[in-house]
Image (cartoon, rainbow, N blue to C red):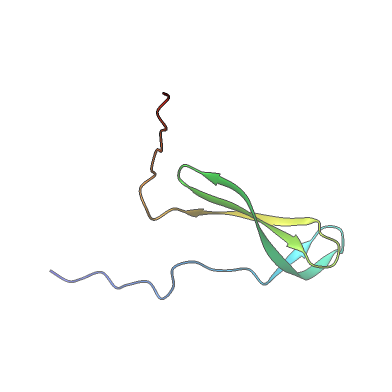
Length: 72
């Protein structure tokens, strides 16, 4: 049986995105917004005006863990 080829990359990272306030492609920085059960949600912010240019959910490779603390 032929094997499936492995992907060249896992995920892409944005370095420039269109900023609606600056009205052009601008450098962005990535900021963690939420940690979700199925992954982490990130927001891309313009480095010039700090407006949101996009977002991304990175799936968590590990299985979610539930931590419980007992009451005495």
